[in-house]
Image (cartoon, rainbow over the protein chains, first blue to last red):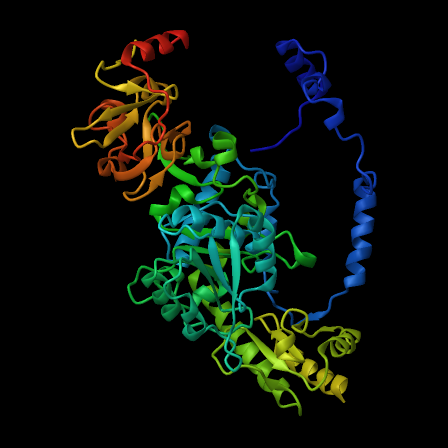
Length: 454
Length: 131
């Protein structure tokens, strides 16, 4: 549906109908002392011409570097049709379509998106998306406290192999609501979480454990063993997954030997048709089992029939949400990312299951080729022995930051410097080569790194 | 006028309380409350073994338009949440004082309970509220 602002005549007519002289009068009940007159530090608005120029200048500073950074956001090829369709007037809004009678197209698209995400993650139900992967982890933690009714502790185990930014956002969002997030160390040689590190929690009340697969280092966790450990103790499993990897890896809905799978699955949807865009906007996804659907935050679109028995789509289970349940809603800080979900849905339909599988396999092979080329350089080695997906940690013979600067001077973004979040790894660099890198790119990087270290 | 059985006790927040022969109490929402909520689509009842304080939200009744908490009129330990309601939430609409009970609990000895009203007083409250 189109979102066309009211004309001054519309506004006049509406005000006249309710007997109010101005829009301002509608806000009379808010005391003057509580009203913000101006926001310090926020510049005045720019017009389209000015903002276009400013952003072009900023984009020029970024240039078109060759990107070997992953660390949660991945450069994938996006078919031209994805954004050509997404930016059509009928779709071009981030707005949640509450008005079912005027929004069937958008609602059906979100319904298809939910079906795709449920299928990809192996779960029964999906919401209409969240802000991003980090906020999805925070929401999943809060949800686990509501849904795991046997646990009273509000303790959430977060292995250090989980994206450190996700942990920070979870602590910032849910830390003041009484949730405690506790680190679990990883095995130094393999870069994965072991059951040994979890032994100390035997016999204790823990609400949930977050398991990222592949983990932040790109390594594959033993998700079956971790899931079995958690479920044997009544601990919820929150899976954090990269949607691209699910084309090759076992879906979280099948984790563990019982076949019960993870309880809540979240992640960042950026790899599905969303450009890097200097860090956002992206979108988060969340899926779960039907038994927990009333504890799931966010919008949910359902399929139904109208009075004549014709198929239709509408928002459903809204009694959980903030506009109805107010302070007791499942979340008061979430929304869906309608436009990005539109792109992701079109992206997935164009790629199909086979296309997504080829993207995953190519990315995995390219990263393996990149690691082989870079570890052939004296002093550079792979940090971990476990199997990985499309990212890997390299150890350098010198600090990563100056090396990355030299690479940047040659127009190469060489990876994510791990020293700030993981100082114990020494001079460590997280690298990634998706399907968008080719053999020449990898050779160029190897040559540049050899020069930078020389 | 909604149905207010004479043999039960009532709260201002529209719960009813029935004392069972074994000293435990059965709790539900009144006919007036179920009518105000409309058709229920989901009822969440507490698990046995949980201790609840006086006035603590311990069940949720959800209709297509709203979800409301049910507050415990008595402090005690839950002995049973009505297992029927997971599959048949409409029992609360159809039979609020019978099959639609929400939970049973064993009151804590000597603990305070909400000011419970007799049927006549509850009927007056409904009249005062325009119901």
